[in-house]
Image (tube, rainbow, N blue to C red; front, top):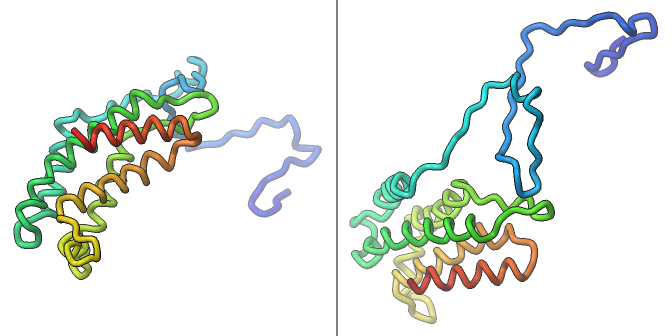
Length: 189
């Protein structure tokens, strides 16, 4: 008996052995803790286990340093903006490291996992603004009513992207205040 691609057993077929050939399972999991439970070893033995460690800070600096190097080239931007590149990379890695060490997941806040995707979101937001040559947002910031230097605008943009990425994940004011204090500290440094 078939209904919408789903097979149902009739009364006569119940109890008969069915075999499924060429079926593969793929599973992914995070390390237990912070509201995540461990699965039994009897189940894990059926899977090939692969542990992916996050890249080192030096590797992250190399990845995003190269992206920003291509994006902030001397043909488009002034030397002041280009000199902000290493500060943006260091500040982003620093805030990411502080957040993932300080704001930990709990059973009620199980989504407080901060991995390399958050770094990508921060840099992606900066790149989206910087890569639009037709708008020239960073260059034209001197033309707005409250004149602001390009490098200060870039810091403001970075702060906005960090808040959009990290702060939007947080669920209570206490955690948001902790993040705000960390962001202020990193910005001053």
